[in-house]
Length: 232
Image 1 (cartoon, rainbow, N blue to C red):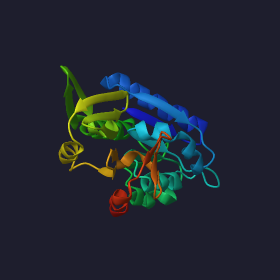
Image 2: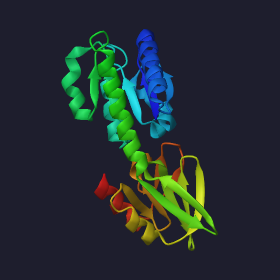
Image 3: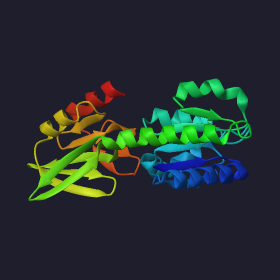
Image 4: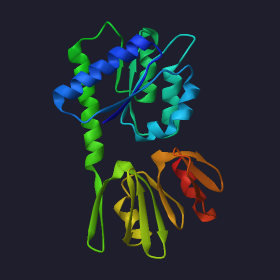
């Protein structure tokens, strides 16, 4: 599980990170933690690549400073599939957490280690469920199983499809139609005759191209623009 600890208070960052590390050791869960001390919610734009790969983010709220609630709203607006936990002494905004689909709101000094463990295990279980949804590809005796949540996009050239996913690419023979049918219950959108993209990795859309959180740009075909508008 990939976790981002984005708390403006250095002490909170340290305590939260230590709690996560201890629980990861106790449970044996494979966890990586990235710590961020940001001044503004807009600073998250510079960490788009980390966000697209993360499973969980702890966000703080500092009156007059970093507004984790605004950051959460921006994350949700971009369609990023990441669990959010608020970790802040600011009690007055707890009900706003429902609007951004946060899984918990923790106030430092007012929750037990048992409560933190419960939040960690909930996020871990959700991460594992996402990764259990996989798709399998085969070509020339080679086989590849890829978690659907880690797929960025598919590209087709003639009858050779390339799946671009976190960690690499894999080529196989099929048609885009068959892939679309397999993934019809997931949030993929056809943007071009040659491209099928996971909406959660799209950072920006124009009439002629989409930009992924990685910065990569893919063309939008005129006849497919309505697909993006329909799903926005």
